[in-house]
Length: 238
Ligand SMILES: Nc1ncnc2c1ncn2[C@@H]1O[C@H](COP(=O)(O)OP(=O)(O)O)[C@@H](O)[C@H]1O
Ligand SMILES: [Mg+2]
Image 1 (cartoon, rainbow, N blue to C red):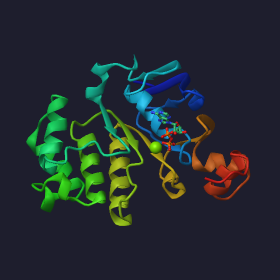
Image 2 (tube, helix red, strand yellow; image 1 turned 45 degrees about the horizontal axis):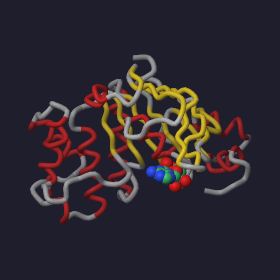
Image 3 (tube, rainbow, N blue to C red; image 1 turned 60 degrees about the vertical axis):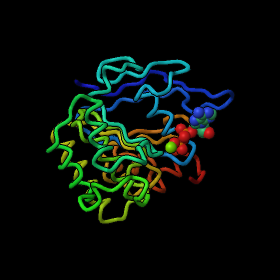
Image 4 (tube, helix red, strand yellow; image 1 turned 120 degrees about the vertical axis):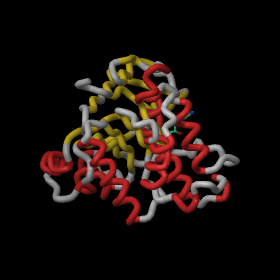
């Protein structure tokens, strides 16, 4: 699949709010694409359109060759929502197993592997409602990964994660990309952007610029990505 994610003139409006306002996005196979933008810029709405949880007001979202919404595609997509979608009265392991089973890919050794990856082995048999926020975040990531999807859509996956584990996550994301998995990761944190192959700068539902961190800095004539973003966004802060 040459272009795992493609949108054409994609719009999602809520009344007078243009949450997504004419986005043409193209994410290549095996890359880590960073969707960067301040709060309210439309990151979550765009990702929800890609998952098929929202229906576009206009335009198209094409994921793994299919126009979304399309339930059949979801077995190949790992989605980590910004707000936790876990079952509070199931254990960590049961939650992850449930997600795997829903995708028809319940492999106990894979469940164990993702629990180890997110460093939750000691808590695997605890109910999710007894976990800290960061642990829930880690469980949620494990749910997105357990069925070994070809495309990962991660909505601010590292918020609330401590720096050491965050570094572990990013090296895992890189390993997945090296194996040909495509990752679209949203963030409002600039230091994470440097770890992405390409970035899309989103503001008020519009994709203002796309490119690698180096390309964006060169185009804006700045030495940091933060300055580049401010320059491209016209001096407004996040
Ligand atoms: N279900 C909804 N109903 C009404 N407005 C919404 C809804 N979802 C998002 N919005 C609005 O769309 C805009 C973009 O929100 P969102 O996609 O959550 O941005 P981000 O994830 O970048 O913070 C915001 O103004 C938000 O209030
Ligand atoms: Mg969001």
